[in-house]
Image 1 (cartoon, rainbow, N blue to C red):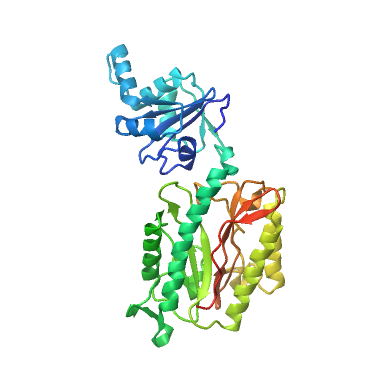
Image 2: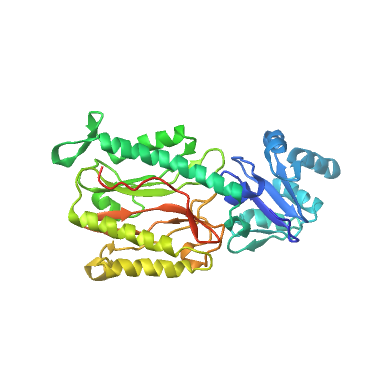
Length: 379
């Protein structure tokens, strides 16, 4: 991170806060303190993390919270509260009016006020430099995508090996193949490849796939479209991969095949438009219009009171240390160095759901596809 004149303060766990991980490169499950002031970066750590912080954190100064506490006790004769220790750390670095993320804890901000520290929340992205990925970050995102692809290939392998039983129920290894079983096999493959599986990986069959974020449950069936959406995190870097494929085990109907193909053409339309300066919202509108022109309008059925049908989510989202990372694709002009998913979907009750999702890097010339796994349809 580049130094700035204004002090920036983060107090969070880097396992939960992407800004903290980006700022420090230090993985810790418990909250700790990061400060950037006058071009220098410092962290305040407990004894539990201190030695590792010296070795691993990408900062200028690592300060011991217990040593700072002892100095306060010697000076005042009383054990300080955690807020008093943090305030002392900030004052020592000349940062009595730091800016903080918008989700900074309200209770802690009130405690710091009592110690003479005035924090100012920043609306929007706290570290906007995260939008433009460095060459190193692009490598790390790509590695996370490769891990995701390993999980997807395992899904294809199992579905191809499955047999079709009574009432078109799929079986694998002598047992019914359920969304839950396939998800477990996928996530095991991701773990072996060095990824942390998402808690809500999607394996949704038939009508279940008409809910874009429905996890899916129960027996998988032949001749039905199955959406597989995987978004694991790298165990080493913390960067996310994100991919979706839609497949049929068996034979697709003409309706299913047309829906799958039109959705793919919509994704290709979006990809062809990617370049710096283009309005993401305009791309979204073009894709939605293309779907409408081909017989799949975005609407609520039942006179506006039923289920949504058509394309009713975003064309894509930013990807990095957060799964859904700013900027919003549909509310920004694209810039070289940004990484996005491109994932139009069509969800038609009575036919099923389709989503094609890949990851792209915006380049000065246009875009580069970071995902490379194929898009099979009938398995």
